[in-house]
Image 1 (cartoon, one colour):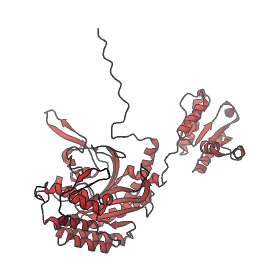
Image 2 (tube, rainbow, N blue to C red):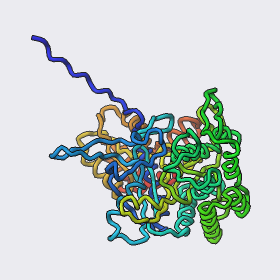
Image 3 (cartoon, rainbow, N blue to C red):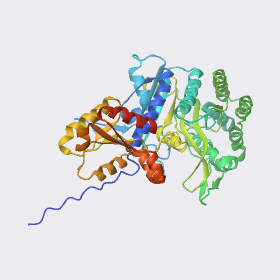
Image 4 (cartoon, rainbow, N blue to C red):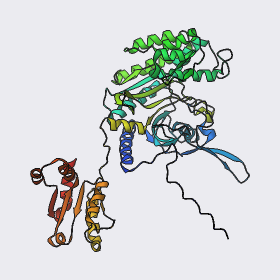
Length: 508
């Protein structure tokens, strides 16, 4: 009789494009999100937690990767008893679900509706260095008002959020543009074209595809500069690796207004707007976009937000296809070293804009909306670069176990520490080897170890070891310095909590 085939063990590997988050990372993220939520709450926004799963129909096809419009989400088909199937998907951002929530509950919600949301999103995209298929976003949106005051408020709130979490003024810039201005530029290039239905150039792709190609090219302005964008808009260019990238196919004359638009940025807002008016010419939608930028600029100036914090920048496009008006991006301007040791700016950590047509997909009526999304992992990485967040979180006070039969005594001491608001735990491994208990405390990054053996119990005392100071002394101090700066203290049992708190305060 043949032996039953042995089932292979599953591989203990993280799925490609995903990662695990351990204690200190989760703690750091939680603290940062608490700070951000405080700013959002201060501005009058309410929390919303929507489902992680939506119907594919509700999510729509708005991902920037237009080459794979049906493959950008993790989706599956769910069948009912009759064999009819609905396609479901994990949300790819927090904005599309908000449109569904507002359309569904609009009669019960205030208008305008101001909400913030935080949580993971999923994108079925090719992973790469620092690019994961699951990542956290932190959003704030206002639904139900067309006033540019809502957009100005979002920009101001984003500025204050960055400063509150620890990015100082001068190390960031919130950049603002308007998709209507860009549409006006395209009108001045091609005439009044229905970009969805028409073709811009003979033999070219559809108008919608051509527009998206121009938008993607403009988005590369910061990386390739004016000359690079000109080549990509026309005949194409060779990248740093030597590979040739096809151009969009515009003529030099057609590309010129786009270049004028991209280079219209000036140190003076009034001058930037003047340059933009020249770029859009007589386009009605383009001039409407410039007036909206002007309103936002005036409102921000009235609130004390100068160009050192928020400025109008025509190079901001944003990739998602649902933006209809002002768009924003928060860029960190300080320099870091990349994996090859080259200096570069940290780059974007947040983006957003106005999306007046997203709710309309559900209701048939235009519902104006605007909002911002912060990339949580990138902002956390920036705070670590600036030294504004510890790379290693402090662990709990560890209560060592000298006599396993006295576990109740040790648990009572830990309870006292916890009741005083001090994070603490009893060592629950094999207590036979005391050295292993201290190794455990080191691995936990514990600040303090508490020791009470039989002799200490009989004398009514405890030994309290400052593990952080002890490690520093062991690394660098001479024997004489060790004697002058003890890292272990013997105190009455009743002073346990007070002494531990004193040591923790000194460490802080």
